[in-house]
Length: 246
Figure 1 (cartoon, rainbow, N blue to C red):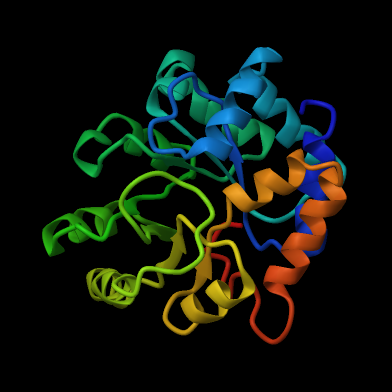
Figure 2: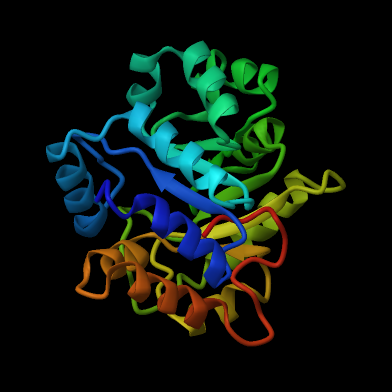
C-alpha cells in the first residue's frame, strides 16, 4: 500500500537486496501472474500513479536508500507520462533504470536514446525461446544487466527452476562477452534452493511474486524482510554483483 512502500524499500535494502525493482501498477499486466496482477489492481484502486512511484523513490532516497532501483512496468505507463518527462523525473527522483516487459528490443528505438541521454539503464529481457540474434540485440541495449526469464508464461512463485535456463544464460554471456554485463534470472524464483542453483551460473536472481505475497500477508514489511534474509543468507548472496535486481 501507499503507506508502507517507502518502509518496504528501505527494509528490502536492509535485508540484503542489492538492487530493488519497484513495480508501476498497470490495468492489464499481461506478463504477470495472479499475485502481482492482484497487487497491481489493488494499487490502482488506491489511485497509485507513476508520479506516486517517483515520490516513493525520492522519499526512500532521503531516508537512506542507496542501492540501485529500477522501475518495472508496461510501456504505456511511461508513454502516457512522456518519454522525456519519464527519464527526466526518474533522474531527478533517484531512479536508476527500467524493466519494460512489453517493449521488445526492436521497438526501443525511441526510449533507449532517452535513457542514454539521462544516464539511465534500460534492462533488456531474454526468454528461453530467444535466438542468438535476439540475444545480440538485447546485448546491444544493455549497460548494466540482462534479465533472463526462466520460463515462458506469467510471473509467479514455482517449485522448481527450468533446467534449460543455464543454456540461455550461456548464450547471453556469449553475446555480452567482455562488456561486464551481468545476468539475472527471474520468473518463479521463490526458495533458497532456487537461489543456490541459479547462483552456479548467473550473477543474481529476481524475486517478485514471493515478496509481494509477503508484503500482503499479516506480517507485511517484516515478513518481506525475513524472506529476503532467508533467500540471501549464507555464503551466497541474492546477487553477487550490482547487476541483478531483487
